[in-house]
Length: 279
Image (tube, rainbow, N blue to C red; front, side, top):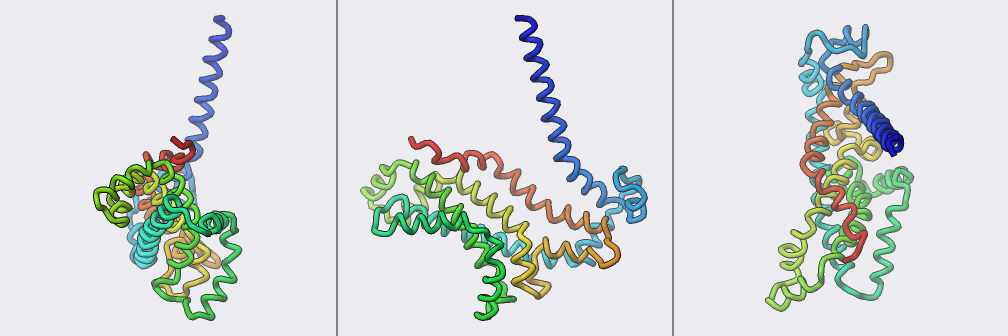
């Protein structure tokens, strides 16, 4: 019995050490980028791993102003905020209708949305570029919004529909008896209950949109319309790369993502598992 307890304790210790080392291996690249962004170019080239002896905050000014990161930041912020807001509103409305109403073609519509999750997104890049070119939709302020919203709708509808199914229909019926309209019931009664899944959709849509690269690279050519991931490529030269300024720009691009995740992370698991078990 004592031997069994000792072995079990040793096994737990080994597992905890493994998890700790794995966590450190995940955190180190981020920490390395942060402190490397504060080093001079010469110090980084001499030793890319050591801590900086002198902090060079000028790298951030150079990245934000000289590298025109503010332009890409504004474009990314506009596309991300607009995409997240429209995806949440559209996905919630569509999911509410699909989960609460029975009508002819309902299953086919739902299946079409779910099939959208199976399509390799970047396989549509070339056909979409050609279609946008013919229709004259390239290089507009709304160019990236259309594919961003379309790509993120299927998963969002699936999450909303699964969650709303777990909400008792009696809430809707009670609201109707009290004279509430459908719009009032959706926005004032059902939507507040959906806060966990709204947080999940918000985080997933925000991360995907903020970090999206290929569509921004192909569909828009004007500098002020390009997003942060594309803007980071400006720090790469044909023969040399300004690594410290690049890392400063990467830190600036990471900060909004970390802020959004830290605010909503408590709800993401709850939202992802919502609807897995019907009450």
